[in-house]
Image (cartoon, rainbow, N blue to C red; front, top):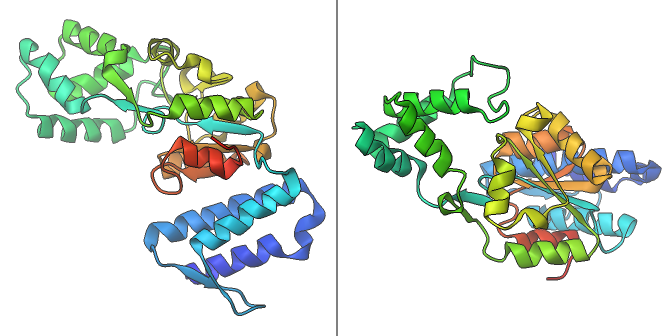
Length: 292
């Protein structure tokens, strides 16, 4: 089944009909990426036969041919804009969230172990949020208060405020890639625009300032302000609007297949899965065609 998908993708991408316009190219690129992503998640050894030549294409070969094809159309730089997910891609908590909940919570009577807090946190986070159709509304205090109470069994408002404030400080977070600043500088110098696209509340902007990385980005599309959360295409389209580019000229990088990859592709953007298709921002830059 995976080989059939890849064969169809290859045929569609490299057929003569693809020259009919960039809209077709963008849609085809998204289809190829979706098939590749789907196939790679089920097997690391998936290959696809080419019907006309009888050759065999590995995943890396198909990706390279698609990238080469974009370069034949757009030049050395394959995308005009880079969209980047925040939590899980640009930055992560400096310590496990459950550990922080427990350490701060002990003085407020929290007795659950880290493992119990983590289990309860995941269960609460995955439940439909009844307070709004959006989890992150403005500062998202009602949502996070619900998460903290459900995770720890503690509803003390002072405990919640201490936790909430802590996660706005630079001590609470670290960059996923220590070379990020150098890479983003090179990407922008090459003329590629860069934006954050994140499901987050209004603390994101002050957090970026605290981490001294706000200037790395030309725009920030945060769900609490856009009033749309990934995978809703609206937030990706807003980011493109802020940057002044068409969706087919942008590539999004994020660590969540559903929210980041599928959401971006539904908006018409290219998308790469962080931690799988790309593992560093230097690799992202190289795939776009930017030398670092």
